[in-house]
Image (cartoon, rainbow, N blue to C red):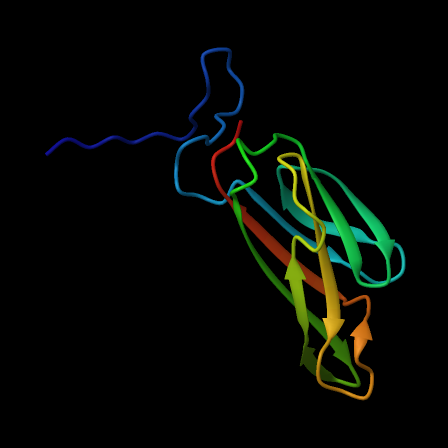
Length: 129
């Protein structure tokens, strides 16, 4: 059996190798949605725009090949020492290959409606252009 041991894979010009056809996440972001939004970690995100309470636009560094990509979304908010898991959804506005919009909201509480969670997580899967 052959064994391949490597430390770094680079493209021919010495740069980073970009995943294009593999079944790996092509985009992810972890950000703070309260106050001035702040990205904690990301991949393939050129900018994050706060569009209002609980409404955020993700702009991609490298566009997806078409609008048939898949997104996963999660959020949590910490208040009074406990974690609240709330509703939300990806692609609140029609997605394009270069951006998508997400919305955070509370579904079942006296505080139902859009809000800014402390933790928002989004991943995207699909072919890149």
